Image 1: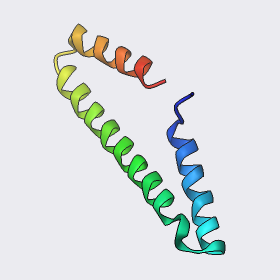
Image 2 (image 1 turned 180 degrees about the vertical axis):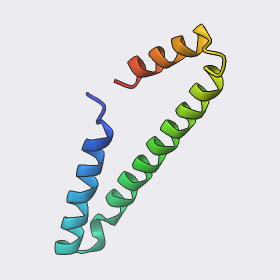
Image 3 (image 1 turned 180 degrees about the horizontal axis):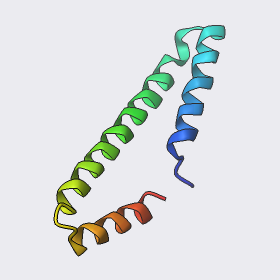
Image 4 (image 1 turned 60 degrees about the vertical axis):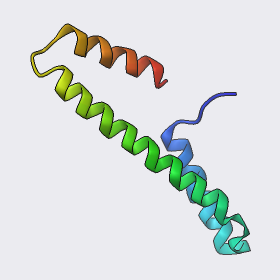
Amino acid sequence: MKELNLDEIISARNECAKIIATCGEQFLPIFERLEDEIEQRGKRVESYHRALKIGTQNETQIGTHLKNSFLVACK
């Protein structure tokens, strides 16, 4: 099964919100789970950027390697 990207999760959250507005709060746990996933991914991206900033302060080859490895892993 393919992992959803952030845009797909945001789209699902938005659709879920429309369903809640129409059908009621029984779908709220799904909405909350999607919100949590969006928040977690945002924190991960922030941590990644901090790590890159630290790791590449001296334009180190290790920092560049980590960046490339992370980008491949996140696809």
